[in-house]
Image (cartoon, rainbow, N blue to C red; front, side, top):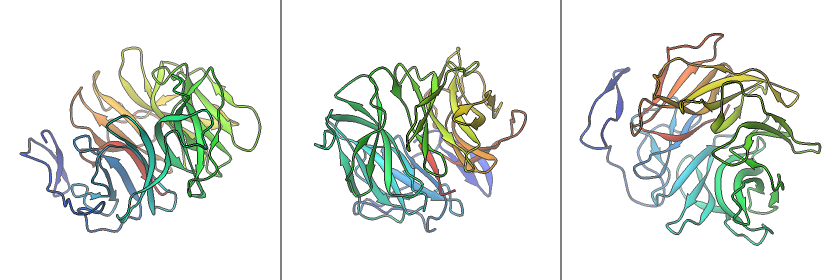
Length: 325
């Protein structure tokens, strides 16, 4: 792999390496890394499409590899830090929800595409996330091969599938729970490439609320995530020029306030995507400085003004999540 960023003595060094770290290919999980996972990042690497975790106390250059079959997308850490849920995509395009312990071990299938429990037909699974109580997983799917996506929920034993947004005119993106699990926040719009609203989806009754005024943000690129205390959200917004930046705003009574950019770190071609909360006043995001460059996970403090001071947390990562908080 070229362009991999590595830490040397606590200082960031950027260089060209002859290849990636050697990985242990034995079994269906496990890998490198000698620190038990308690809190940190889950992610995939684009070169092999396997799931990795790295604890905040561990070596970011030696993550624990949890899968070995490839085809993994959008891993998300459970609220107790004991498991990861992710999507697998087969060579024929079929998708499924799978789970794996953060300590490594058996990969289990939670819910498969076109399961009989999904009356309209389920396909194209995306961006799963655990509920705060760990009893269910919410995810994006395409009902009946529709071009519009919906939100679904399934129990962590594979039972009780429910379509949460049976709407034929709106598409939904990556969901995030409010802290008490009573509602979801997700980008919405006319399609996954035009998520120009943010939806607040109550799970205990009531109408879905939509925030359609996103200022200079043309669309949400990937996801909206709720802060640990439920008072803010972070999102990656695409501007008119096509650049993607990380923003935060308030969340009150299901509505968003005015967006403000978190960092001024990247140039015009930089992409600041896949935001996640890594603390009460800190966000993580995926940063790549140009098309095709090797992305890494960075952290930035949420302050009143954009900051150009960020910290590299994990090199060579994609589609990250963080937990538990």
